[in-house]
Image (cartoon, rainbow, N blue to C red; front, side, top):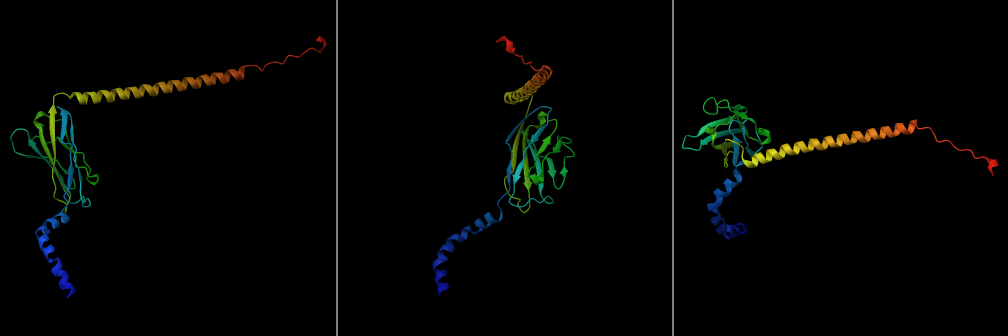
Length: 212
């Protein structure tokens, strides 16, 4: 009787929540893999461009089943092209504009799915899509990177490069100054010690008692 009464009491609530049963079930079952990319990358024509893509998965990383797929969408209208695939080992493209240009620079166990495009050209301008699947965690948003291939480095990059070089030179100069100063101090101490050893001990003057 008590059980029947409880069912009658809570039945309206259960009936209202029934339409959301599938939604709650989906949230519990699939959390979605999360992919992180820098958004935009700038590279000088003829240099190497690293496309960084990291991920977080709610499931343990299984190196035997996890897959990484990179694709390319050009700036102008054109078909999407496969760039790279990873499953237990790297599978670089055998043809197309990325042949012999793509290098795997990621670490699956470190949750890193990055690649590097060597000797980029203006034809490589476009959007790169990073897709990672770690079964059963196979749902989630893809990561996108917009690559800008330019003739020369931007002012900010040149400034950072100049600051880096200047900082390195300043550090070397400071170390040299410290080294030279220490050497000089050491030499001065040695000379002072040698001078003290060579100097004869002071003679004591004898007083004449008859002088009084």
